[in-house]
Each structure stands twice: as structure tokens, then as C-alpha cells.
Amino acid sequence: MKCDKALSFWFVPAGFLFAPLLLILDPWPVARTIALVTISLCGLWLGLLGVFMAIGLARVLRSGDVLPDEYWFRLLDYHPPRA
Image 1 (tube, rainbow, N blue to C red):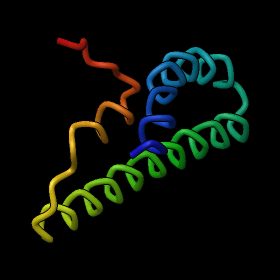
Image 2: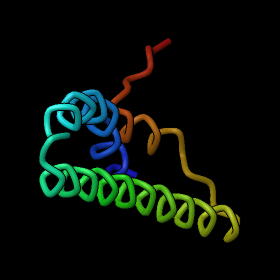
Image 3: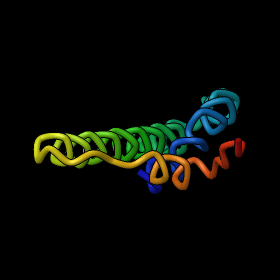
């Protein structure tokens, strides 16, 4: 999940950067194809990370274990307020 969290956040800003890049590269079909293949491979990688995360969570839930709240707090780098 840390890998998914670390690599997912850059995909949306990259999409905003790739749109103008594709317009600039439009006159050069080879460069445009390389950019489209790069975008596609990044999307595929992000999808695979999501699938692996879902498989891991399903394995934990199927075994009957519970992920403690501290795990989620550590993953999100969140420190709950103390009472």
C-alpha cells in the first residue's frame, strides 16, 4: 500500500503535463507514439499496484485478521489527537 500511495499521487499531475505534450508532439508521429506508450505503461503499472493492494487486503480479511488502526495511521502518516 505504501508503494501504491507513493506512486499514485504523481499520475494525475502527469496527466495534466502529458496533454500539452501530446499537442506539441502532434507533428511528429514517432515521438507522439512514444509518449502514448509511456502514458499507457504508467497507467498499467498503476492498475497493477491497485490489484496487488486489493489481493493483499483480501488475503488479510479472508484469514480473519484485522489491520489495527495504528497500521493505517502509520501508512497515512496521521497522528490522531490524544484525549
